[in-house]
Image (tube, rainbow, N blue to C red):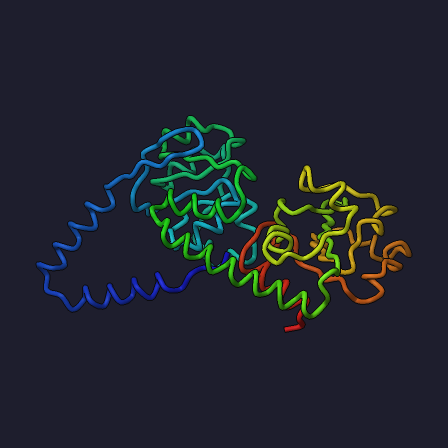
Length: 304
């Protein structure tokens, strides 16, 4: 998700105001900041209520699908997992964050986090909980926009999170209307990924911008994709059957490791390929949902 600029501007304004105050006011503000940093709230997590800091300053995120929400809400991340760290979109915000795993307990301890966000599948949750309050989120338990609001609640920024969601839904809906007016109401779109020498097609709830494309923009999905990929969210394909799953347009999320399938006659003869209706994205940038994916769709379909 794209980082919101307003909080940074607000911080700068407050900093300038503080510099113009006398020393007693500065001292008072420092005492107030210390008090606020020690305050806690109770968050209703998926495992029950848990006490967390009301103003977290040093967050470790082990569930990469939550990292974008934390960044969008302008909360400092000191440690992230590999998937988030290698995302080029996140690099400006995570350049000072350490790459960690659920097994690098000593490294996480050294980072002195006051909050850890993880997934239920992470190892050592009990030990992580000894380091800092640890809250887990299950991927897909709620839709990605509800998930963002839940992260907002956890970080005591529900208002900001809700405002972002409302604005994003409005922009995505408008983009969908504009795209359909440009390419046609009934035109179908497939989201295909080649990763680790395997082809996949995605439904409407497994990242790769599919929630935006199908749920918010309301673009159509090929019938074969609906049949095979909606239940589990994705479906592994062989090259031979790829044409059956190809829509009038294809969003191709590629890791760039093995693209030899694109040199085959099977691939070249797909109508979307012949019509130059294939839009290729860097897989490491494309795993989740947010402003990057929305802008990618707008630019690709509308030629902006």
